[in-house]
Image (cartoon, rainbow over all chains, first blue to last red; front, top):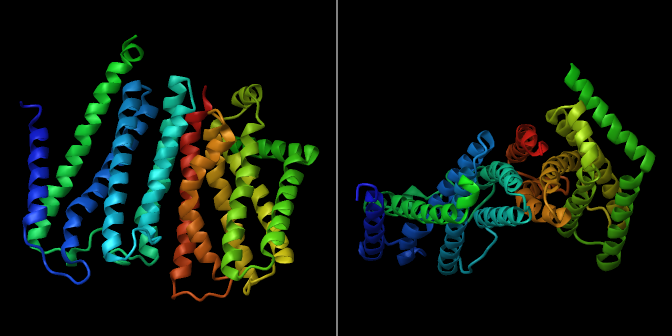
Length: 222
Length: 220
């Protein structure tokens, strides 16, 4: 019970986001209308993805410092959940874009950045599968993980500030536009959506890690 | 000063090999010539936007071809020899410099061929050449590191494309934006230099990452 408090918290927060996000009052905005509610789901998925990928890189660095296969399993599991969140973020974004920008894909710089992130991590898994030696696979994958993350970071955080984007916030702030959310929305967003989805990501990751630990039991302790 | 001597020796070895075998140079040169010729047959004289896009795509493929070889040609035994005479940092720096030189040359050759065969939409020639130099160096830096990673895996050539294309997207987008300056587009004050500095910053980041990460790939 004591160790699973954060799982209960995660469920409560997500229930609150789901119910509150769909039922609580939101400001009436032109074009956005009721689709503004998607901000509770779409944006937290991106927050979650960035946090999960960052965790993955931290474990990749840890692996290079201390070659322990556990770190490799952690890094891969975090990358897998991050990719899942990225796909979900892309889909929720495309649905939103269809109703607000007119079409699901419009080559917006942030859509490109998201597609790039997913391709990079897809390549990460292909690279892993192409190496048979376990230690070498872990090392090469860790190197690519760190290198790709270092390339991804400017693409997601710096380039969108330099070119025009359809996303709100414009040139100044590539994240959520604070002007579109009122105080009530911010509570659901920052207290419910962001921590809720991040915790869910960590929860899924721990399940993958526990599964991999059982599969690779012989390698880890043998 | 020992380190720079090692780098210089490794660089000299690569250049000498190239001069004697002349395999990469003529191979890639022929690759450029035949690609541009096929392009000429299919689209003749494209407008400047298409020209720009195709030019950078061709640079990307030239880079994959030219740089991939630099690690694939090193056999296991030879790598072991380098391991005993030089450090990994010197080795990767020599490779970075060598690939940048090769790519610089290839880019300028392909720029010339593009101008001759596909028409010349370039208005500000000096600026465009400077951008091409910067662009070819950034492409070669990224693909040098990726070639080093791919050399450790099977199906190296296809893996390089899979790993490289998503990673290179930001640089490529920036390059296409910047090179429009040479094609006559005017930018808001400061926007162009911002992007050039960002690209230069990315190059420094790639070199730093290569120097930090390559020693981990090196040992087997």
